[in-house]
Length: 335
Ligand code: RIB
Ligand code: CA
Image 1 (cartoon, rainbow, N blue to C red):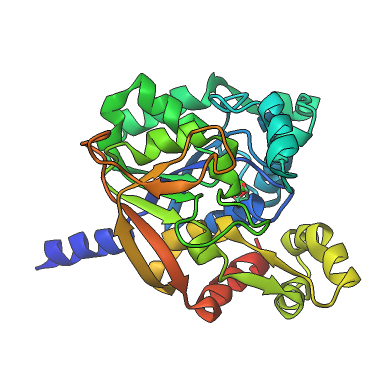
Image 2: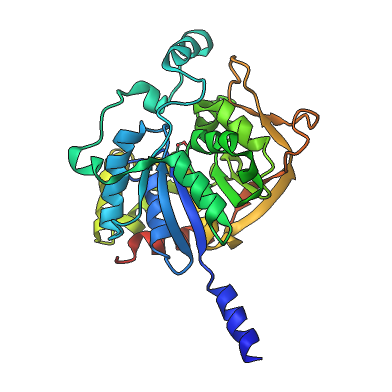
């Protein structure tokens, strides 16, 4: 009986082992997602952070994300440089998209120079590449590893192409990206992360990873922060909320009706308490990789093309009040 109780307790307190794959941000939303996980070490063990291009090129992104690791007093979390570009998509292609199919509102790294990380951060970045870290961690871990992918999935796609056996070894993939029923905020069919690297998203969706949990725009469009939410968090005075204010303060000061999405934070929150999700559906999904105005959009999978592909659990709706309580607690909690 005693042994059984100990075993049950072990199960209850088992930490989720997580690879944090990010396209980085000053704070919202990749940075906030990192804070959320690091605030709950009893639930989540962040094994390492792998950087991928998306919002920023990885070197510039490392400056923001290392700053957050330091703020959270977690300088030992290893940081790995990932792909330096998407698999196929290039700036020249984006210029053609702008000309032919109308302006792309947020181009992320495609609109920026790829500058090196600050000298003091360069030595904080591991000599090992993100893909090597992913492969070693997933293949050697005695416990299943969760991949939390909150940027384009270039790193994961490359790891799966190098080591197809990893597909079945990944415990679960929780990702922010894509959209099944909703449109992107600029009216386009493709969500940013999938648009930035459509071919990578296709490789991952066609894979046999046993559990794929999708936080796309279907759920994320229902989770907006408005000024009153902003003030509830900004009102707490901690180093983390100072960064929150620095990132979002001007926007809310200028416009009382402003709002912002917190996409990646939902995917991170799911690892801490999935009970805020109120609706989901399962589907076999693929990505439109034809270079046209729907480049990167989610489409149904023709299963003959990927017979081993597993279904995606698509998150559709949430209890926002419940989620916000968790988000606020984690962002305002003193480190
Ligand atoms: O479309 C939202 C996604 O694009 C988020 O992951 C955000 O951080 C950006 O990468
Ligand atoms: Ca992101």
